[in-house]
Image (cartoon, rainbow, N blue to C red; front, side, top):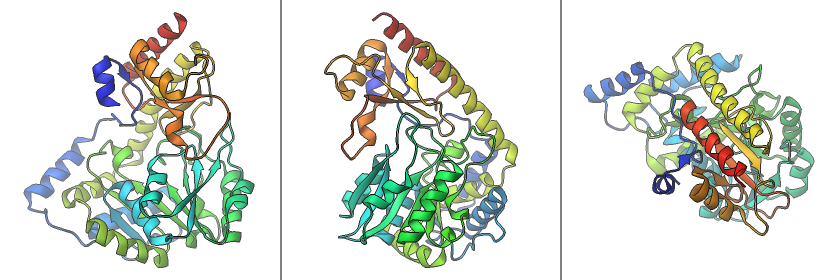
Amino acid sequence: MTRACLAADAVNLAQGIPSYPLPLSLQEAAVAAIRSNDNQYTSPRGSEPFLQAISDFEQRRWEMPTPYDPETQICVTCGATEGMLATLLAVAEKGSNVIIVEPAYESYAVNLRLIDVEARYVQLKGPDWVLDPAEIAAVADRNTRAIIINSPHNPTGRVFTREETQGLADVCLRLGIIVIHDAIYDELYFTNERPPRISDIPGMDQQSITINALSKMFSVTGWRVGWVTGPQRLMERVARVHDFLTIAAPTPFQAAGAAALSLPGSYFEELREVYGKRRDILVTGLEKCNIEFQRPAGAYYVMCDATSFARPGEGEAELTQRLLREGGVGVVPGLCFYGSDRSGPPQIRIAFAKGEDTVAEGVRRLYNYLSAG
């Protein structure tokens, strides 16, 4: 999409690549590690300082009565992407199935195809993107090993409520399904309180795995450093798989990661404030365009109903190409986030990960194009 936007001289509101400035102290921490020759493998599970930093960070922000054990309940991975693949390889096998809550980040289904595990789907109910736990029970069977959830959610910006989270936990505890929580956006929320966490529900600490990374919190998608947390019995399996996938995550960036996770809470408050302003610019522009959407409560995406400007017989891919070519704006067709058949209106995803000027210019172009008919 980046190449397509450059070729069309279009504003790229398609990709979720963050643009929040990386603190100088974190840059210096990475450079210092390299200059001190800290460039060889760490332990496969991660360096001791980074593992301890993760344990402290998670305990601090979630007010955990007992922190994760750095030696047995955490595994550092090459980003959340490897963390997800390692987790799926650890909990599922050929002949089993994993449920995906969709619309969903497309790599979930690709990972399952790679390891020859069946994907089953539960769709969030629009226009409010509500999760119905009863549908999870309806598609699960004795071969269901896990369900993948993402909250705050890509591509809709939803944050699951406590009621939805409890309902999900009730079903999974009853059926013995592991919840894999992709928590990559969990510091990007615009609600008054921190989004609920599935592992905080009684019983789910032993039946859930959480995946996170430095990428979106600190705008370092190229560092490829993430972590997986969960109960010891599951983390032993994840760590074994990770060892044979990549051995270890990049050592200098683990050192920088330890510094990152030690930043004060004010860093994350400022992060949310900056992205909140970008969200408001996009939301105001979309309202001006008379486009229907659900106001995002987290992450940096909006899923829009494209009914009002889709042409008769036009598919989502053709629609987004037209917006790129004629409107000068890059967005993502909704079909990219579905693996199952769906009915309902055409959809597009718009990201507000870029700076305020970029977001404002994108919605200005969109408004001018749609207004011209």
